[in-house]
Image 1 (cartoon, rainbow, N blue to C red):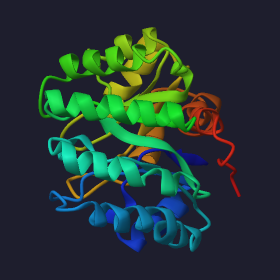
Image 2 (cartoon, helix red, strand yellow):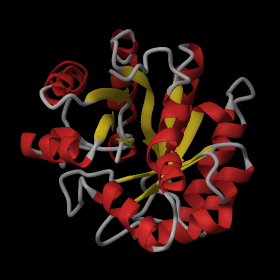
Image 3 (cartoon, rainbow, N blue to C red):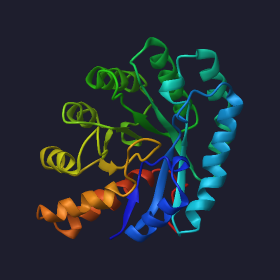
Length: 267
């Protein structure tokens, strides 16, 4: 089976995880910028981190014939410090030119605060100014429904933004309709203890269809499984879905979305 892992934080994973992904059929990995497990104290820390995901991680992935793509931002968990957030945003254009950078992300909300929303809007403007795609994080510690509505409103307020070039991730049953009805792509994250299970994801595919959706592991420092996408594919097969259905969800859809960037080219 071939598949794309469209949301994975590989800086937090071992090289053995890349090997496991390759054995499972992974052709490419998307790595959005995120929290480091602690709050960074300066923009210099983000500068080094951006170098890590644009220079070092692609080399680790290439050892196992996996293409690696990155997205850049200051994550919403660290957006309360407006001075730091704006300093980080100011260095992002230096990295947008990198060959593996597909867009701005994962931006969004964590606690649905005023400062987080302000920095979200500034990230959206940055994406528009540089003609970048957007990958969005929806909150899972606070009110996800409220946060998703705030995010969709912020995106809709940017009239020059093309919704088809935005994916809103970590959707659940009560937020999927809001995202898809506004023309945005929707991502479903498969976590062992939170977000959605493979069977819940399949249920949502049966309700909302297979267009403009992807599934991902968002594997990181926490309890997460970098092989959750191929495991979900097995669950689809157990429920009677054929190879064509599975290939669309785990491979063709991510390729369709990511191909909107001219930088996305599978080896």
